[in-house]
Structures are given as structure tokens and as C-alpha cells.
Image 1 (cartoon, rainbow, N blue to C red):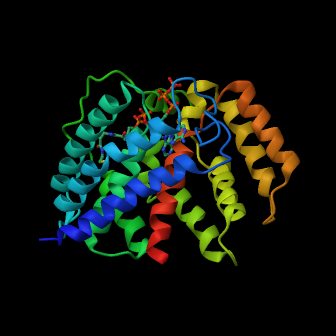
Image 2 (image 1 turned 120 degrees about the vertical axis):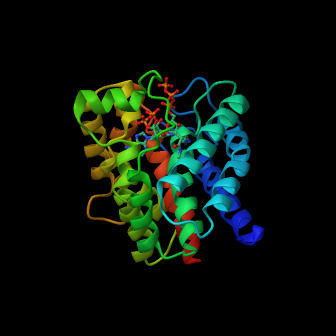
Length: 268
Ligand SMILES: CC(C)(COP(=O)(O)OP(=O)(O)OC[C@H]1O[C@@H](n2cnc3c(N)ncnc32)[C@H](O[C@H]2O[C@H](COP(=O)(O)OP(=O)(O)OP(=O)(O)O)[C@@H](O)[C@H]2O)[C@@H]1O)[C@@H](O)C(=O)NCCC(=O)NCCS
Ligand SMILES: Nc1ncnc2[nH]cnc12
């Protein structure tokens, strides 16, 4: 049996990563401690309460995953816990979707970390891919289509499920920026965020606009840090203008930003 303290540590680390992400600023389009981004129904307090409400979910995922092999049984167990976690989040936020994608991404990462009892991120990414690829027979096949499934059907992009099933390639890229930087400061984390904005096909952005706008947004995010460790302020301003104009919100990137921070803690 996993020492409860290890499971507790993972759950605490996951909740802390969500709170750190919420507080980080600037994050064009997203909620921060100084702006509600492209949202009229969300603010920082809601995100912090939502994050706290998920402690039990991550704890249960860590506990059931302890030394469990990657299997359909594990996938379905964490699926059931994850769906209950989504319910808890919606109760806490009175129906506002703050962390659905984060429950998925961090849920899978907490599970494989606990299952393999490792903090080696190469192993974690590989096992996360294996676990996320397993279909869950208990997913409600008659549920109404999600924003993500509609965007994927319309444009054949990868969404949250594929990011995990592919072993979180965008989180790996983001983590490498932090690992190879001479000093880890606000500028480096902003570079990580812009790299996620530039590379993730965020289905939330598509839902609020379309694929053409997503590509424009990604190109502007790329220009903000292209081949440099210093922010190009003009390019960043263009990015902010596009986000404001279309009222887009890269919530999927926010989740992967939190996931990067979660894994970065293993390096400390
Ligand atoms: C497999 C699931 C991820 C379901 O995926 P699907 O794509 O079908 O579902 P969506 O409902 O679209 O949710 C996906 C959420 O994932 C985030 N996301 C989007 N694109 C990506 C991407 N390319 N890579 C990674 N992650 C991505 C995103 O979540 C964040 O945004 C949400 C806030 O959005 P916002 O626009 O502000 O608010 P909305 O109300 O949604 O829209 P508006 O009306 O305001 O415009 C917030 O959740 C962020 O976290 C997508 O929302 C998975 O969810 C699943 O199967 N779950 C079942 C339980 C389970 O098996 N769990 C496993 C163990 S934990
Ligand atoms: N800070 C944030 N703002 C908006 N949507 C998000 N989804 C996850 N984190 C978010």
C-alpha cells in the first residue's frame, strides 16, 4: 500500500500547480490575479476554490494507482474518479467549467506517477500515453458532443485526449525550456506559456473562433519569443490584441502550463 503521505504529496502538488497557474500573470485570454481575460463568468477566487475542491480527486487517483499496472481496469477506475471530480468542480463553481481539462491531464499524470512510483519524466510521459490510449467503457456514449469533439470533427486537429495519448509532447517541449534555461524566472515561464500557445491546437480557442484564428494566435505567440530568451513586446501586444478582439481563451494551454509546473517540481 502506498504511504498515504506519498499520495497526499502528489495531490497537494497537483492542486498547487493549478493555483500557481491561476495566479500566473500575464496570460492573454485567461483568468489571472489581475484580469479575468476573455471571461465574464470566472475570476481568480473561483479558480482557487475549484483547485482546492479537486484535492480529494487527485488523492483518490494516486491511491488507486499505487503500483497498479497500466491496464483497462486502472483506466476505468481513474475515469470514474475523474467524472466524480468534474461533478465536484461543477458543484463548487455553480456550473462553470474551470478545470475539466486539468482534471484529465493532471489526473493521468498523477496516476502514472503513483503507478510507476517514479519521478522520471521520460517514464511518466511514456506511461501516460499508454494509459490515455486505453478506451474507457463507462464513458457515456450518448452524452452531448463536447466543444472538443466538435472542433476535432470539423478540423481534424488533436485535442486534450490526443495530447495525453501521445505522451504529452507539448508538456515535454515546455519542460525542456525550463530545464535548459540558465535561470528560472518569470520571463522563462512566460516563454513556456507562449510556446504552449504557439504549438497546442487548443479546442477552446477553436470553439470561440475558428481554425484560421487559432493559426493566427499560434503564429503571434511564436513571434513573441522566436529564437530568443527575451520577450518581443510588440509581438506580445499583437497577440493580446487578437485575443481581445476574438475573446478567445486558451484553457487547454492553461492546463498544460499547470502540468509543466507539476512535473517541474520533481526536478527541485
Ligand atoms: C478526454 C477528455 C479530455 C474529454 O475531451 P473532449 O475534447 O471531448 O472534451 P472537452 O469538453 O472539449 O474538454 C477538453 C478540455 O481540455 C482542455 N483542452 C482543450 N484543448 C486542449 C488540447 N489541445 N490539449 C490539452 N487540453 C486541451 C480544455 O480545458 C480547459 O478549458 C476549460 C475552460 O474552457 P472555457 O472556454 O473557459 O469554458 P467553457 O465553459 O468550456 O466554454 P465557453 O462556453 O465559456 O466558451 C477548462 O476545463 C480547462 O481545464 C477543454 O475544455 C476528458 O475530459 C474526459 O474524458 N473526462 C472524463 C473523465 C476521465 O476519464 N478522466 C480521466 C481520469 S482523470
Ligand atoms: N486561468 C484560466 N483561465 C481560463 N480558463 C482556464 N482553464 C484553466 N485555467 C484557466
